[in-house]
Length: 498
Ligand code: BES
Ligand code: MN
Ligand code: ZN
Image (cartoon, rainbow, N blue to C red):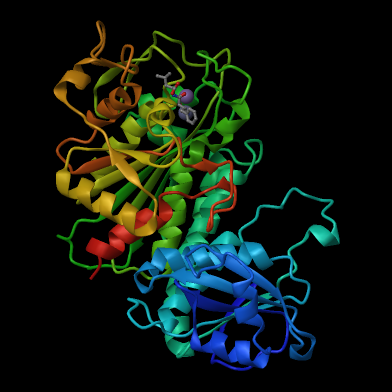
């Protein structure tokens, strides 16, 4: 499906989408179409509940002489409802409502709305971005798709006042969409195909867009002393990997510190010897969601040539039960020197992140670190799928993340960390244990990570509830959501460029 921008012109093919504001105020283009159709739009509105509210749509069979198939009126709501996000959602909804259109062409006709923060070019770009995001699908393993199940729509053409301006905004957004799609692809791959080595290879492909990619294997990690990470992978026949990605689009000065993103990449989490119940275990293929977000984010930043120096580190392991697997009761020594009593082999994400965070902090001395992980089932109990959990040792970073989340509708909710919760992971025999007691499961997991970040500003996003969606959203078809890519791209854009 192609997204194109055009000057207003008379269209006489396919579906035409025009807009109305709250109170059924037809746009100038809609009024012209109404006249051309002998008042078909106004009559259809009068015969319906359509009021021009946002999210409302009205479909009209086009009169014969127009040669059009269908006219769709979409509500924009009040002029203050016209925000970037609302326009993206509108684009996504229009895509979903027209993707089976046989003529293959949808033309969306936009006029600048008085009193709106966005002009018609900005609206056009955001609608195009939303349509693009919604058009994602993962059909690689479907060999029997029938012609009538395929998407029919070939072109979404959006008309606005200034094509050059719309295209310029859209091109930048589409780079972010490409990062989102990469993440969704990785999360959707099955675990027999995507395992540490093959996931590392996918990250390596980012070299062609100017990212430096380094892959560490088990022997290198052993030399670095990453006993916590290696313990998790030791029951798997697949070799564990640590991938380090660097995008240097910012200042060349040696004294300027990079920003860093760290991802949990458990390509499959059986739980290990503390094995999970079989029902629903297939969901654990997306336990590498945090790493996929970091990889997709790097792609987005490099794709849009962000003026920032960013490091992405992903810890890739497979958590399997095996004769050589880690046992409950084992004590491992992390790269930081701190020892960990592994009481539950299913609390593995924090173990691999402990070494990845420490490594990132030591090696890059970053301005801040944000890690993402499908870390706990408990965060789903707390927040469901409408917010990800946010834990941080730094109020400024935390506030900036929260605001970026509101900007892109990937919402975060901050939960506390404190000494009292920290004590819950003290061990009798080692420096700490990898699970707390009863209660506060997401917080004790965060406290564990906190012990590996030193004094560096740090935030942990627990994305277990938001990485996969069981239902369609306007810009997110069901499946992998890539939650975090747009959020962190926005964080960078808001505060860390230039
Ligand atoms: N990957 C899981 C967390 C998870 C659960 C993500 C459900 C998505 C959906 C994690 O490794 C895990 O198993 N956590 C345990 C921790 C417990 C053993 C302290 C959990 O949440 O049950
Ligand atoms: Mn687990
Ligand atoms: Zn896990």
